[in-house]
Length: 283
Image 1 (cartoon, rainbow, N blue to C red):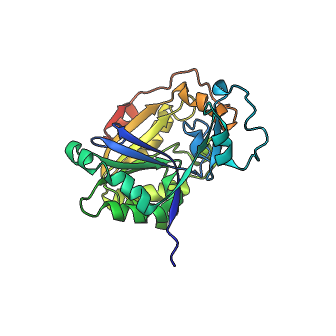
Image 2 (cartoon, rainbow, N blue to C red):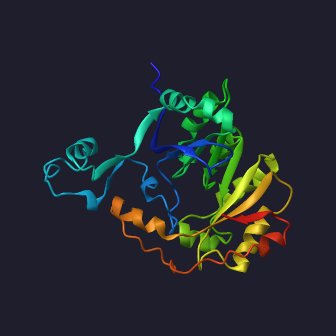
Image 3 (cartoon, rainbow, N blue to C red):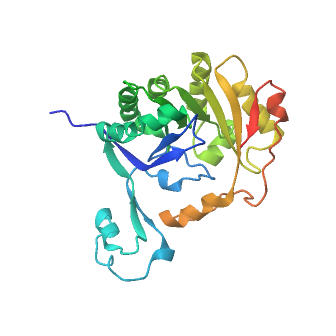
């Protein structure tokens, strides 16, 4: 008997308005190969379920004291204040498709659909490809993906070819700086971006604008050079860094030490993109 394919999801968020056209549901896949210093979803990094601990809600009742630390459901059940919750649930393709298709009428009325994010959704590419095929059956949903592009060419093309819109994240144009700030070489990302441009698939380039990291005129020109030329690029979106990410790190037991001046506003000048004829906006 075939075992149903599953994926680890850490949130299914309904009625999102900034992850593509219309009203959307965004599905957050758990697990990411990058280690961006500014990551705003630290609960999405680890590719296994984990406990989120909100210390302010803890009343020190002691209910969880004798429960094995690897028994995550029991730890969560023992907490009367929900100070401990399990982050990460396994879904089958059928379960998640059923959940998403329940809002098909809302999507149709608003011109919306479903967006896949993370974490990095391409880490679970086989599941995502199968799910996309299911969601493109009648009535077909508009599908979008937000991805770092750090994946094999096979996985990237298999999933992206099934999407109606791509949000392609870019972290830094310089390989040395990219390795420093994300822990990974950008060569696979840049190769996948080249394929995306030649594919004609509609896409938005999203750049988290980090002060002192990638907001210099030279870095922006580097991004522009990666994006110039004929393609399905709709626009470049600059997402200025904000401090809200830091509040999540204690929940997953990590210290937030980004290594840059988080108090300084990034330089959001769009001139380097306009010089290359690229439409760009600050979000």
